Length: 186
Image 1: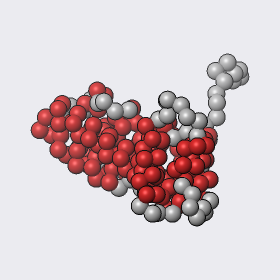
Image 2: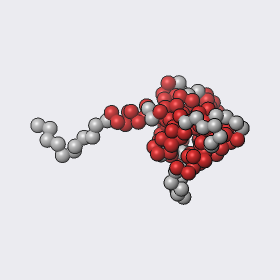
Image 3: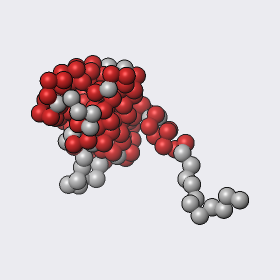
Image 4: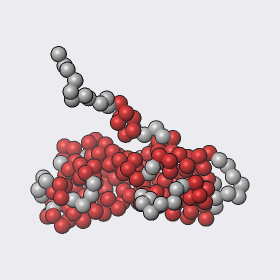
């Protein structure tokens, strides 16, 4: 199997990095696991706006007797056409969970986790198809490695981090300082 097969995959760059790590035997364990977490965390930060996360976190804290968290979040959101797919998925899972009788907190955390799991499986399907199409006979090994790594992603932990606003990716981005390219270093 070619080493550069990940470069033409129909997934985002972070997911291509996961493909690269799954294809290399030395990177299949620790680096692939970190890469999978980074890829899904990156998707969440791109597609779940801070305002949306703040709204659902607020609804999680409120204990209403007959209220619907999905209706409250929907009414507090700006209705616009370019809402990200992941936000729509969270809302669909939230409505489904509330319809089955779950309380706000459980329904919100579960809906966020369900949407994250859905994104993980969708990207796995895309990667798997690309490997099978372009990988030849050696494609089964990285496919199995990717399945194992994606199944091990701590989805509930990521959902709680997103709701609390304490994401590892956000903290890492904040720690980098800007460099002034015109700075005199003498």
